[in-house]
Length: 334
Image (cartoon, rainbow, N blue to C red; front, side, top):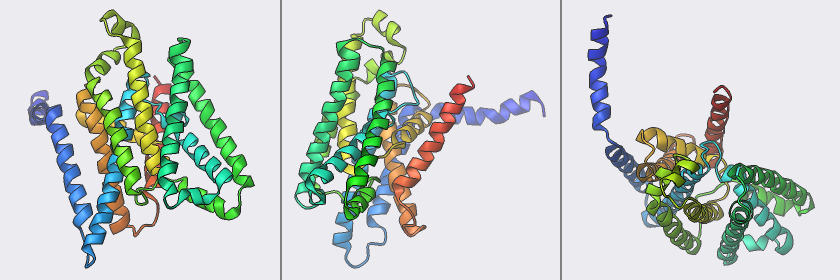
């Protein structure tokens, strides 16, 4: 086959890629998300359609909060840390969530996880996680001006420490309370109360709005610290604002749904791949939409094809774990 023939066959594909600008790709992701959401909410509702539709809307809203919060925070965090492998969850936020839950049950009993106490539990978890992240960032990054890789290393070590404390506390708990905590240590999108959901949405609007307004600054920060400062960007101030917003988003999403260790890593890279550009005005919403598509599509498959054979969070963590190992192996060969 001649080179001219090969070039002629590849031209239509090249033209199609040129037509699919990031804006069109984002629109396609949004359309696919809308189709999946409508199908999930209204498919096979049966006779008790009002109750089923309301429950499914709550489930989709919870998935949307998780997708937007974790997707936007992961992309922003990877940009300011100049590392597309590490995420806030990998740094120990999920382990902190499990530790807070375990401490509440150990000190107050499993009754704090049910009834009206669920909203108090959600607010307490979010507050503690935000304060923890702010203290960590302020001590390691802002106050003493230490390098960011020290922050990442300490975060990973703290995650291991939190998991060790949780394992110790598990041995001290009543077996029934242990089973309850073990069940809640996996992410759930179907057991959310309405008050906690609205609080999470408000936190999401604040944190996500701040990050999205800084999208152009994040484009500059992706060039590196020295290049950003030389271009006149207030690097430290923008970094602090983004880190605070990331803490707010991750804390709200994790406290609402539970730990999703590799979910952020998975949807962030799907967003990068889908957009074909590093501009954050596209990659931020793309990661959120990829997250929503993954959650709703995965839940549809589990319900309609696999008859709830496993948990959605297990499948997501497995896929994200494979991606995490692949990225580590690729980097080690560079």
